[in-house]
Length: 69
Image (cartoon, rainbow, N blue to C red):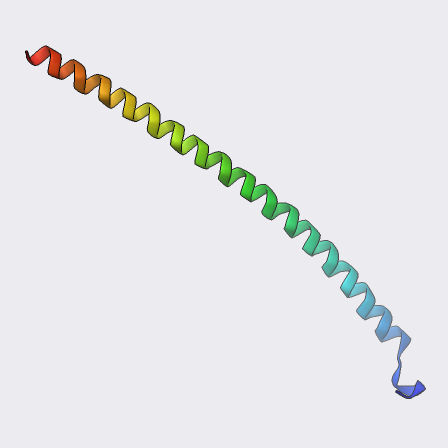
C-alpha cells in the first residue's frame, strides 16, 4: 500500500461510523434483552390466567351438575 493511498480524513470518518454503529448495536442488544424479559413475564401471566379460568370452569361445572340432581 502506497503512502498516497491512505487518507487520514476518510479513515477518521470510517472510524467514527464504526464507533456509532457499535453504540447502536449495544443499545439494540439491551432492548432485545428487555423484550425477552417482557415476553417471559407475559408467558407466566398467560399460564396463570389459564389456571384461574380452568379452575373457575371446573367449579361452575361442578355447581351446575350438583344443582341438576
